[in-house]
Length: 333
Ligand code: NDP
Image 1 (cartoon, rainbow, N blue to C red):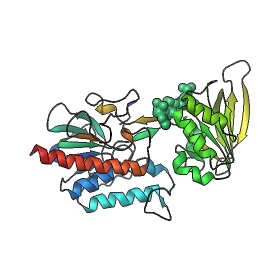
Image 2 (spheres, rainbow, N blue to C red; image 1 turned 180 degrees about the vertical axis):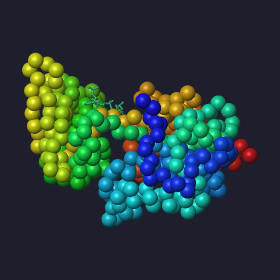
Image 3 (tube, protein in one colour; image 1 turned 135 degrees about the vertical axis):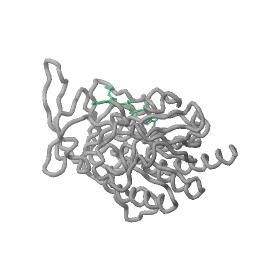
């Protein structure tokens, strides 16, 4: 399945069509509208690059799926994810960013100017491209998981763990992320279940050891989650033990929060013919910079960051991308 398949955009304003013309040339095109994309837009617009930003597959990015954001500096009372993204959009627009609905469906980085095709029809030529397409957290695909998103189900312990202080939670996954999230939650929750589908953890030795040493983490090996239940919010999870084996059985754990840590998928598919990525699809950048292997093409935010994945780090790398784009254009003159 293409990660860039258009989402339903029922709220698309009628007076802002994507295909203003069949082809146009800009100095800087930004793909994506999370904290990285909008921060890049603010800096690029203020540097007079007249950026054109396409909102992409999930306008506002992953933060639009969270409730309260309490760890972004500057908001002592916290702010909701959607409101924060609205503010960032307004700030980018204020300095002249041309913000449009649209999903980049293919690119051509083989020659200058670079080409970005939007919604399979609109052709944009750009001297620089800033990729801020983010990553998508993987979910199990359960109906009940959808139902409780934002009311017990989360894919980010660092973002939402605080709301579960003193409570019992579960983390799904057996990799480094799951262990890291379980350990983070163990520092504030009463009990953390780590639900692992195999009989072993895939995480690095050291992370495995830390999990095993944590007194309030219980690892439930060979368990698959069948269903989440609760009135309004998550109250319990129905697990299948040793699924598919003769001794398969069901068990219920009482929890207040259910955290997914089964990996993220970076939204990098359309760039792969041109850009170097790691084995999991994250765009490779020169360490400490947003530079990709193609001059004038920059990547920022979660599409190139599998370690930190925070709004504030994404915003920081968006700033770097715009500064780099400005410098690249000045040198190219
Ligand atoms: P991984 O792909 O390493 O692990 C994903 C885990 O989720 C696996 O245990 C997998 O199970 C499990 N899983 C996948 N799908 C399902 C499913 N449908 N149901 C139940 N379980 C499922 O992803 P991570 O995000 O943990 O890590 C990604 C990369 O980032 C890794 O290379 C990791 O080392 C790195 N990383 C490094 C960190 C660090 O160095 N501090 C921190 C975080 C990540 P199974 O094992 O059965 O396939």
